[in-house]
Length: 219
Ligand code: DX5
Ligand code: ZN
Image (cartoon, rainbow, N blue to C red; front, side):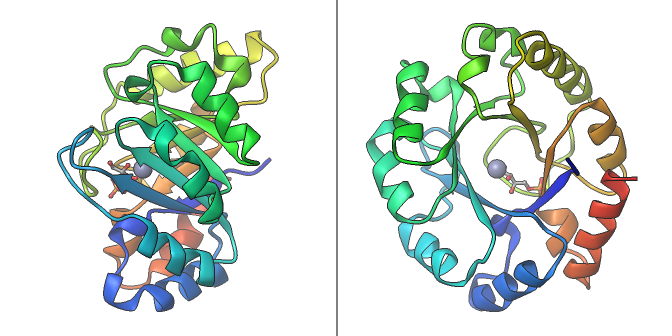
């Protein structure tokens, strides 16, 4: 399988969201990455269902929703109805992670778990077979445009080993500070999905940047 590029909508132009959706639809991007922040789990508030509704209307690709919120179980059904195909909750926000993942799947979505930079991969030893996706945070969640944390490579390799050892089919997603500089090293370490916000939308030709990231990650 080739590495998927998932542009992060957080860095899009909200005054021109339909235009940015059309750009992503026509680009080499595989997924949309959608960051939902509640101002409690992370020190920032992003957006919720009104923006999800715009994406549902205009996006023609997988909506990969990353919930940076407390008590995510309360909103699983709403995100399913809003068009989310992949729903990722934070390990640190779930007391009953096994139950949360089962609930996400019950609503017809792929179930993901996100790990903050300080959370060890080994915490997933007893749940990896239930994870369709593990999102490795390569910055502290809350904001786009932060510097990539180098320890991520070690975590990705360890996670890949855990997945293979368990014969699991879990995808590895990297989120934060991804760029053309680290895309190939991340794919070599075992990444399947690369999220890119600032690296895409801060360039003059975001579509060309997505193509370059896709090419680099799959070279
Ligand atoms: C950070 C978000 C990321 C963010 C990535 O909390 O989860 O998805 O949009 O943005 P960049 O690629 O700019 O680091
Ligand atoms: Zn994210």
